[in-house]
Length: 287
Ligand SMILES: Cc1cc2nc3c(=O)[nH]c(=O)nc-3n(C[C@H](O)[C@H](O)[C@H](O)COP(=O)(O)OP(=O)(O)OC[C@H]3O[C@@H](n4cnc5c(N)ncnc54)[C@H](O)[C@@H]3O)c2cc1C
Image 1 (cartoon, rainbow, N blue to C red):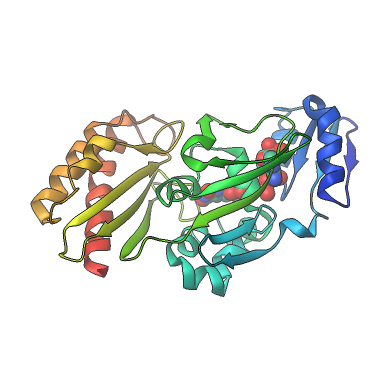
Image 2: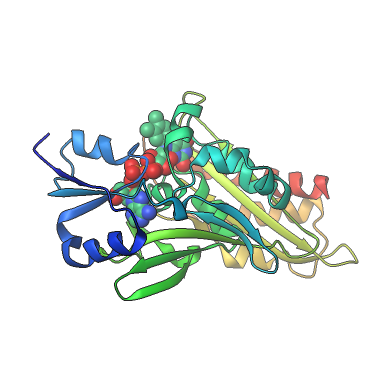
């Protein structure tokens, strides 16, 4: 690798100020699990790396009543998976992070790195979209929030400007009576990235009818996929087996999946159909 300057700012203000003047020529370094591979393969050649590892303020995992879980960008995937707080407040989130790669990857990889990398074959993005989570980003212009529904723009592309640092993930309180789940389908080794990921959130009325259904597939396209017309089929109705099957079929019909080493477009479409049905059935059974 060519000589690359390593910067290790001691505060967020320092990091943001550096990025304000060097955005085009530097890359942020968090856990390094994706970045180091990109460097080694010469896919990127920055002049400097801005390591955010010393920014302890970005590490916390806390819960703010009325707001939800606030997870610092530097929290590792493993810390979120193991957090008693996350397990209590949003078990689906902890379970999802527990499905990323293997324990060695989860110990190094960070929440901010996973979301900023925006690899289409990742586990957390579709779940965070279904949970209507948002991220906080900082730059010399101040801070702003981006809903995860608008964060992912394409293959390895996010709505972050080059001089912005992702600093926090905010996962809102689940609506009363809502349930969620994430199913990961793997077509190769047990530690592989998903062939299809399926996140579901269901909010029911007190009479048992469905108030809201959110179904978001990951790893099947450039960005997480949500088909509103299929979700709308559930509203105001009881989710019987036949309706669940109709929704799953309409949902799969609405997606044009990509083909890659993990599965062809045709194969993924069949899996999406099955996974959509199973994910809804599982949440209804838990209910
Ligand atoms: C063997 C292996 C298996 C894997 N399996 C899975 C899997 O099953 N599921 C899954 O979801 N993922 C999987 N991954 C991907 C892994 O989750 C990501 O590599 C990891 O989350 C990236 O986080 P990081 O902290 O290492 O980021 P880094 O490698 O440090 O950075 C990744 C990118 O994000 C940018 N970046 C980092 N932090 C920030 C920030 N705070 N603000 C703005 N930009 C930032 C960097 O500049 C870089 O472009 C796997 C990775 C490996 C190596």
